[in-house]
Amino acid sequence: MEMAEATAIRMPVEKVAPDTIRLERTLDAPVATVWRYLVEGELRGQWFAGGSDARADGDLDLVFDHDNLSSDDVPYPAEYASHKGAVNHEKVVRLEPERVLAFTFGEGRNGVATFELLPEGERTRLVLTHSGIQSPTGDLDFGS
Image (cartoon, rainbow, N blue to C red; front, side, top):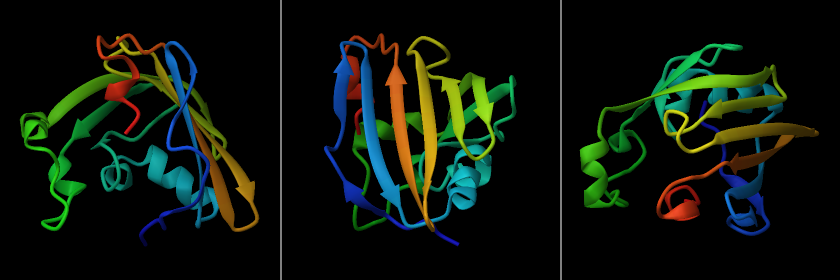
């Protein structure tokens, strides 16, 4: 089953502090489904980066393959081709089943990405806050 696109959009991405961005989306899927797409590597690979499953206080490998995220109609930028198969070794810093997942990003060099899930009937409000961004290009690397 594929997760439906976001249906309620505030701003694409809000900059809430010099090193922090936040986005909020309402998804047409129940919390249990959205949670699986966050923590199960195979499902996460359909929308972001595959790799290992997220486990409380555990290591998390993110494997990037933009071929899985694009179609021939909408190809990814050519400069992303060099990222194919790139692996980031992250740490899960917070895991509250079907509620919160937080892990380091950029192998700890770029802060923490925190996903919060809030049930809204059969839908889910997802709030992503990425804090501690240290990239030389700032939030431009992460806002998309």
